[in-house]
Length: 466
Ligand code: NAI
Image 1 (tube, rainbow, N blue to C red):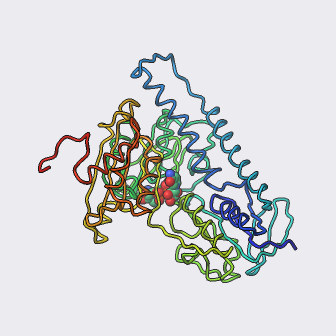
Image 2: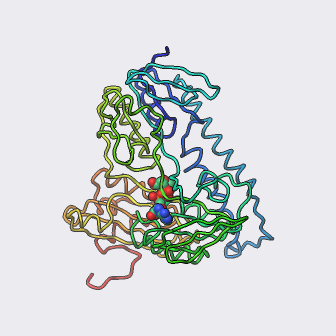
Image 3: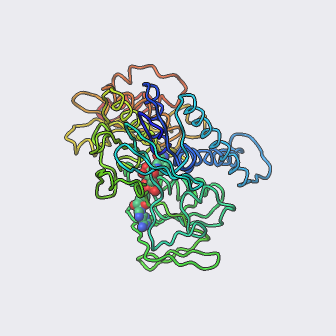
């Protein structure tokens, strides 16, 4: 039986990062993966959607070409070619991860793993073979999949999930998106730009409900202008299917019909068939694997990271958890801290946030100073023709330390990194304002918002009382 210091089950961003970190520290490592490495992020999530968003971004710019003094002829899109490009980007990254694992002498074992005991893993291979391996330490990183509601009868054809949406043979004329969360809104941007008539049905009172309320409202306005219909506070009682049409019946009695429907109502954790019960690995109420801040389960040589621990379902959180788990296994104690996790939503315009909103900071007992700045007043944003949006910084009034930021606007997902670094290192709004930011750049919005924390933004008209 093959023996390893560390066996990682699942080769997503959490799993492969943990494997590489353990190998860097000198461990003999294997990764057991039943599909290609890269997990949801590389194969069915972050990367393919961003590849498609790049296509629709080019299209959006071409549609506005006249504004930039460029006359273009008839614009035709080729969905099949967009998918091909997307698949090439994915292939490049997935094979890149395979190459990385090889370079660290990490064995990549193709098959479905389940625990036999706390040190033994059974592997069922795709050709029906069975293998076993021994590992001193095990890291479970099996991820998640789209959540299913039986009543929605997801058939992968008329009613689909984001998995199928990324490989549609043809674009539908119209699409109902059930769930106005992150996945729903990113896909709404992709498909609406390509001319698909989109209707979002959201059970809560606003789309993107994890974001600041003002940002949700602004995004709703942007979507409306783009012709996207949004139903909020809308519960679906039934989904009816007929040839070429799907109809969602709402609690209000209203009916919404489209050629297809995509369900994006959250994700379910991949814990079944892992042998957790057999070994006695503790699970929580939602089936999540319970871990301590060292990412260790109740079985002391078994760790778990990523979506499967049910904390924050983001690739960069999984990767950090992987580094923490590998560090602890390899004798470099480390703990997971969730207080400064940047969130990035790739809608158009983009949305990004980190740390506390003003409301959350006040709930936490802070007195806060707020700094706002609009991209409308920023030279670079105007030159780019991307001036929709704002940045808000939240600072502790007592210490001036930054507590949080919410950004909606061009390259918001890149700009958030500066604020994340600032919060993580106890940097004040004044420190940020005293840092020279290059001109003309979008980063000047962060500088101006930091100045505005003290009512001193340069490109904001004088406020009363200052
Ligand atoms: P989500 O939790 O973000 O949104 C699901 C939405 O569906 C919620 O607004 C919820 O109220 C709504 N909903 C639930 N049941 C419903 C029903 N029966 N009818 C109508 N609406 C209903 O989940 P989503 O969008 O599926 O994303 C899953 C995970 O993937 C999230 O944790 C997200 O953070 C992550 N993700 C992150 C991305 C990013 O960071 N850019 C991109 C895509 C996904």
